[in-house]
Length: 456
Image 1 (cartoon, rainbow, N blue to C red):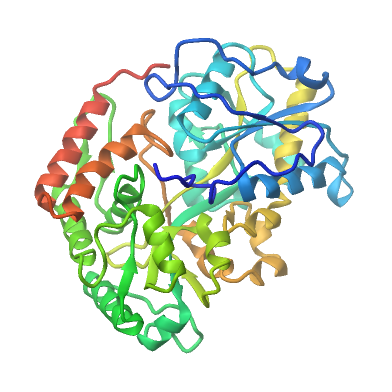
Image 2: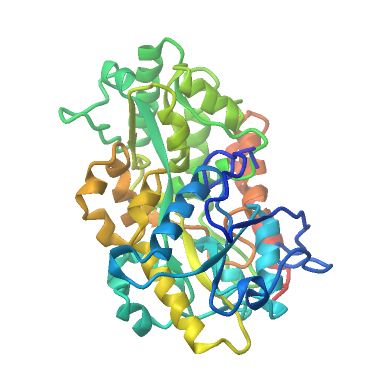
C-alpha cells in the first residue's frame, strides 16, 4: 500500500481534539485470514465503561482531513442540527488497514462492540455472513428520513446479505481522472462547456494520452502503481467491468473470469502505459508529484486526492473514469456505517444508533468537500453541492459504481487486491505478457477461493 490511505486522502497527523470524547487508538495487530488475529484487543473499552450509558460509541478510521470533517459533522449532530435532538458521542479513531478490520471483528466476537462503526462496503461480505454485524431496521431509518430510494441502486445493492441490509453508505469514492484544464484544452480534449470529451474506445484513450503529452511537452497520462497494493487492481477492475464480462468468485472455486476480456484489458493497460507517451514505472507518490508539478496532463487517481491536488495551483478538472469499452462502469468503494454485533443490544441505544446514522448522512455536504460523492442522494440535489468544483462534475460515477467481488477475502486493504496487483505490475513493467499476467490472476483467485472463511 502506498503511504496514502487508499480511500481517505493523504495521511496526516491527528488534528487537534475538538470533541472532548474523541480518542485515537494506534495499535498494530496482524490480521489472520484478513479478519482475525491472536491476542487480546488491547486499548479498546466497552461503550458503557467509556463514558456512561448515555453516550453513543462510534468507531471509525477517518484521520487527517477526513477526520477533521467528521469532527465537524459529529459536532453538528451533537448540537442538534436542523432542530433535531442532539447526541453525546464517544468517538474512537483507529488506524486504517487490516488492523482496523481485525479490531472490528474481535470487538463484535468478544461482546465489546461499539454502537456504530465505519466499514468499507467492499468488506461487508467478510462480516455479515459470520454474524459480526447486525442488520439495520429500515422502518426505523425511514422514521428518521432515510430510505432505500435515497441511494443509487449500484451502491445500495451491495448493502445486503441474503436480502437483509447490514450497511448504510455514507459516500461513494470512485477511481477517476483528474486533468489539467489548460493542457486538456490545448490537446483538444474539452467540450464547449469545458468538460472532458467522451473517449468511447481504447484507441481514443490512447490518442488522448498522446495529445496530452504533446500539450505538456512531457507525459500525457500519469498512473502510479509500482509496489502499490491496490492501484493496478482499481484500474483493471473498472476497465474489466466496462467489457460487460463476468467476474465472479463462487465459494470453493473455480473463478468465473472471462480470460479473453481480461487479456483485452491488460493489453490496453500495457499499451496505455508504454513507458514513452505515458510512464509505466511510477509509484503512487511519484505520479502524484509529477501531476501536481505540471509534468503530466492527466492523472488516474482516487477522488480522495482532491484536497492535495487543489493545493497545487493547477487549473484542475475531474471526470468519471472514461468509458472505453462496451458498458459504463467506474471502480469504486463506499465508506458505510454498520452496527457491530451485540448479543443483547439495548433497544433505546439501537434506536439512537439509527438516528445518529441518519443525521450524519444529512451532514454529508460537509463530507463532499474532501471529494467524496455523498451516497445520500438528497444532498446531491442541494445547490451547495452543484457549486462544488470539480466534485459535481464526477457525481455520475455513483450511478455506475462497481465494487470488489462480494467475497470474505476481497475489499479495501485486502490481500486479494495485493495479489491481483502483482501480476498486473509485472505486465506494465514489461516483465510478462498480458496473457501470462491474467493466468496468474486466475490462479491467485483460485487459491483464495480454496481457503476457508475464518468466521464462517
